[in-house]
Length: 213
Image 1 (cartoon, one colour):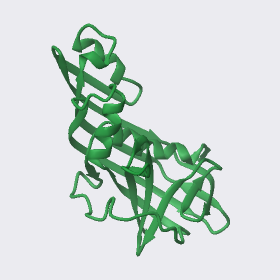
Image 2 (cartoon, one colour):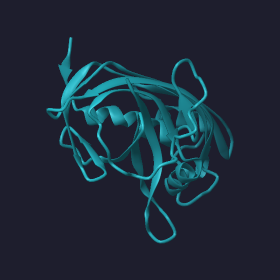
Image 3 (tube, one colour):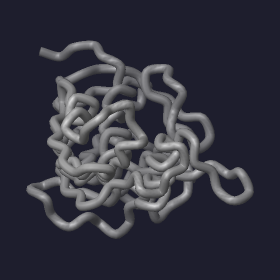
Image 4 (cartoon, one colour):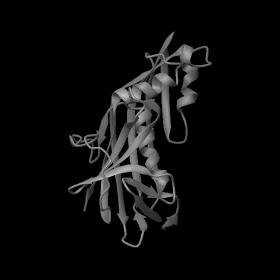
């Protein structure tokens, strides 16, 4: 059954992937990530058509900046060792509507968390902070915790709306995300929530990349 849900929710997959694994993951059974991920600046373009998103990647340096910021600037807070899969088919119709198939994503990483960044007395207590409806974690260690972190995300088929404004792609009247169409590839980027460049410029923490079908 097709349901009406905010299509912007689907882009949570990028935030999930970016703030946990620091690296890139490809779909199709864990194949090699295309080397065009995070290689383009927002440029806009025509998104009308059907796209298969099977690549999600994050910038390790920006990712670690965000993680350190969550820990009072402690650079020991980081994430390593990523693997993941993503599969999402979405159609952008010329009339401004969208139709998407089921979104499936899975990921795994190692989270390095100084115990001083938390309110817990032991690493094992951090498990609950990283465990939710779509993720699980097992943490070990003493003053610095090493957490085996993995999860899955599944969203049902959905309909919605889309529009563009300059180099911003807006789903379901949301705030929008920078995007760029290069050949048969659609790059949808996510800006880091707090990390900024040396002159205060926004930094891209990650991207979803789809291939036109």
